[in-house]
Image (cartoon, rainbow, N blue to C red):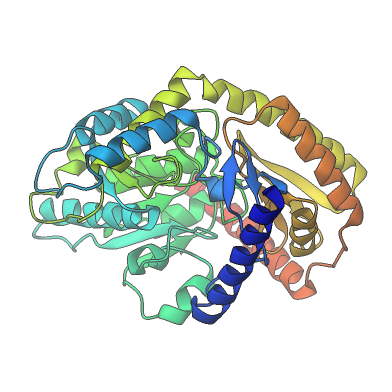
Length: 443
């Protein structure tokens, strides 16, 4: 019977691959593997092979797969109601908004269906606030600053503040008014932060951008400039927030709080839900009818999200994130000493990366062959986003398998033109930074 079931599952998977090849738009390069279920930190293919997931659905599956408390809540609420119109109250929106306000230190929440919609909402809120508080004698505040190597989403507003050209150029012209600041370059920020800026948006730790962290100095400068100019400081915590760094939010390591925060990925345990969280001051930019959503914040997804936040608290998962992070980082630094193509171990908590001097794609492919799920960004930075529930034995399993992957994977040199471009950008950034510091001293 088991063999018959396995044969049936394999046949269904083959059919799913054929249908995908014929009918899905070609927006992803996927390996020819079909996953049929998940449990804990593992995914399973139709043959029953287990894959250790150190990507976590790209930071979505913070509780892994099939967490029993999440399953119970989703089943319970599916029997009651999946959707109510946002013209009416439901049982879970208010309590979930309260919990997010408590975690963030901010005041009010707007629910969305996704991270990119949360970014859209945050940008609209910043412009609405600026227009509402405009000085009739001054220029309108409409410009939005973002950082180089940023990634904020795929919709028009979000992609307009996303830096890599490959995401923006196919869809130009984009939303006007966006400009990019050199990463962690305070002088460049000061030069570009003029009186017509309504917002600056940044990820405290860039995910797609290579697991790079905003510095204390840059964050503080952005906070001061935003306050002085009546602009919004927006923290995009869609990938690095809601516990992933061992704090409720990554920005809580800084002394100053943002005005607006965007969250999504892990919020509803795998169901689609995002949110814009704002201070009372900036939340007043939205009034009835100015912004809305059909599906955002439905009863089932909000119930799931409230349960997710409770699980993180009650199972002390922030502590586990910090402890397992220390184990992983220690292991990765040991591998760095052994493999000379590992240039740097990056990140904190369970948003970690390895900067390589070789291409990362062959390593990701070899990892998949050895049933370890990771990915690569910027062609040479491996990214690890494991679930918050990982245990020491999962970490040891990861390090053991990953060591074999590094030993076996082909070492393909990272394209020389990319190296030269990176070096030129670094030299330019350092030169601009030095010039800006001299100007700041002169002022």
